[in-house]
Length: 511
Image 1: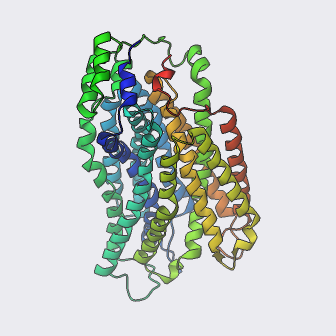
Image 2: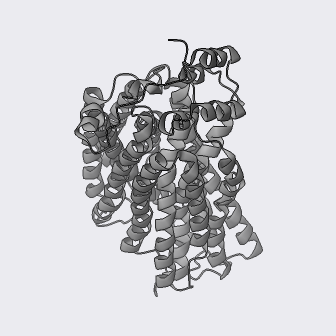
Image 3: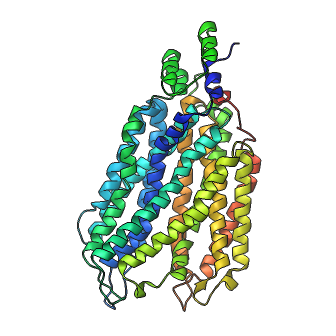
């Protein structure tokens, strides 16, 4: 048979639109990371504004309410991944892609408007809007991954989809920079008093945290028109809607494709794909053909997110160890220092991890770097367990422990945190692709809920009896459990993850 239109897409050179699509498709993930990391200093600001105790010490948000703020967004993400994953296959990627970004923008902006100026109203309102923010972010996961994979060529498809996911790293950095700027400006304009212990922040502090959350919507707003102007993916148009002629026209509108190949398609009718066997998602045939791949993707993502979101808990104790105690700084300085730590951490570990994945994913392979990532994470966590008592002492977390902590995030982003996003975008037929990606992602966020909520209480109850500035034995046992989970991730990846999707056409799975 002559070269098909799909093969022409697969052989198209890497070009400007591929990079433009990374930014457009990745903006939801950018906002996701902005929200996830900005909520940390925001929570500290809210604690000092609304929860000041009578003893004059800076206030903190109670653990149950912190858990609610985190859980609301994650629960919404699970729903969004399942709902918009389903709609992406039924209505088309383009038709619902703009909707998810609109939900993200409105919800994120309204988080800053959280109703009322009392503690209960602020937290309840924040949870309400963060739930819908999670719905939008959850919907963006499958749609952004699949849109990029269906526009990509085979040679660099992994790197392009990983590039979309790497926008999270820039979202983290942007959130830190915005927080630092706002806190510095407010500190200069209205200092929190001369006394370093200032338990009652000025009224402007309430405006500061709201601005931090609202500004996160600006990059998303700037890309909204471009997202709405994107054509439907040529593979969805051709394979699901069955309109090959429109697929070719729309592909030519944004991509430069070899005219000789397209002429060959048009002259010989090779653009006609054989009609797929029209079995349903809930059929025995689907689970026989694709069930094992779906389970492999979902379990890997679940295991990764349990570890990834659990290790973020350790950040609060690192903050307490390496930064000045809140009793010695005002509200703006505390938030500024937290954001500065996040900025350094993102530049030193998070963003380099994403770039390492982009550079190697199409050369080494998805399965291989996923195993490497899980394995090195397990080794580093085990080293943290062995050196725990020596490293965490005298109210300080020693510098080598910070290095090990950074390595966990580097190899998570280099490995399973990226590959779990890429693999579901490649392994399934076009008519089930966003649905399957949404299911795998939802499994991951269930793991995130377990990791960030269930273990939050464990870390709190494991505090040292004499000192609340460093974690006690409870955290050590958590690290042992996370080490075991990473080793399970290695074995699971080796046993069940498909051996290679590198340079394999997506149409290999159209059955």
